[in-house]
Length: 225
Image (tube, rainbow, N blue to C red):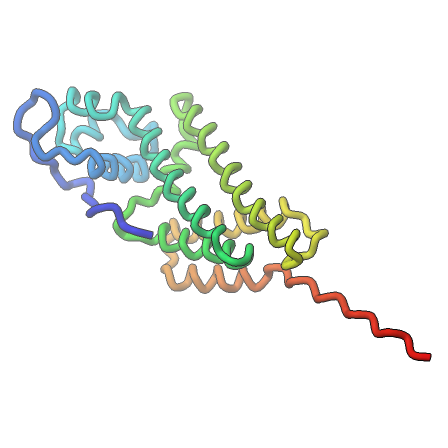
């Protein structure tokens, strides 16, 4: 996965020239990353507009002009998360088999989880899930997103079932949920500080449980008299 720009820590300042409008040199994308780090560290409810403007080194008026309000900013941070993982799934299902697609989903997600140039967005998602009334719409969007990702993988699994690369009696929903369960576990382990190499080793071990391809049917031999 490509890295979108350099990451600013929460202590990084954005040049501020005048209290009117946005400061010269204001980088909206970098400001979004600063905000995401704050949401990760403090949760949605624990992050105030004052915290955000202080970390971005901008005035409240500049903040509202750029992002609308805290709720809109948080929704944008989660939207960025959803777009990145949607891209992972779409690229993965182009692989020749569903097994390779599932492996790529896990491997690319691990690289995303452990990218030092990105905030730990899975914890931002956790903040949305455990937030108050202000994050209800975001939670619903996340639920829809998770269902959409599952559908992308399920469709790829069905293609392999139809092509005979997977047992036609295999339950697509169960295999899809299994991949998602492994994904969630890797995400949690990443948040706990497990190194990238170990996460990839865990994913490889998990993929050893992928169902085998069905054996080709033996051709009947002609009867001999």
